[in-house]
Length: 311
Image 1 (cartoon, one colour):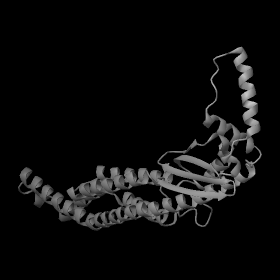
Image 2 (cartoon, rainbow, N blue to C red):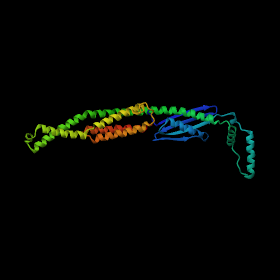
Image 3 (tube, rainbow, N blue to C red):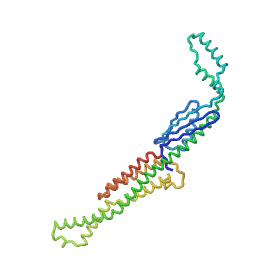
Image 4 (cartoon, rainbow, N blue to C red):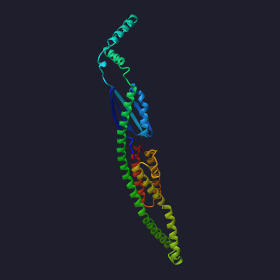
């Protein structure tokens, strides 16, 4: 399956102790690069989130944001008188040594009371389970978005591949005509050259000799401009490209498990296609072939740009 590296996913998990919200934001990157923004109380969840991401994502820069909220209880709403008496006693002791020690604020007292009252209530296993649940749900959403965007990118590249196939077919169709035109021009040039050197030259050279010479020159020219091999390889690359975009696997892999990166294989394939297009342009003997080589390179470059976002 072709997937984009740009996507977003979020999820929320809840329990009696509170709720966990997680967000995944993914953009382009050559490798898998994960950045975490976690609260200190749930820092231990980094390992399980990283493992879950690594199982589903091969490439991309992923930013992970996790927040949590604890469920308010009746204990949270009331101040513990015992704790207040203890704080007052400690403050009195401190002021005997340092007279100007300020008294704690009401917010600080409430926070201290809540922390003391809920120390045992923070069940790590419960919060880790919520982190895992939220991670799994957010991954499903993110992967769905990556696949939808990947299909859109694949559709654009398939259109470009179809254009490349049309260009290759056109060159193959016009190649015999190009060779025939060159043979006619060569015949005219040889006749003109022979006539300018010796007006009665046609009486000294037989038609068979002239035909053999023309055939020899035409054969040499055909060898210099023979692009059948380049066209054949381009056809093969386009076929492989279409298969990869439609299935996410190379034709050689077949039903074997796809363990590589489609984006990297596409990049290599475009390098090879560009090489063949360059060779086609260097062997061009007609303006139409030169234009075809340029058009091929433009289509390949468009596909390469789209592939930069493929995982």
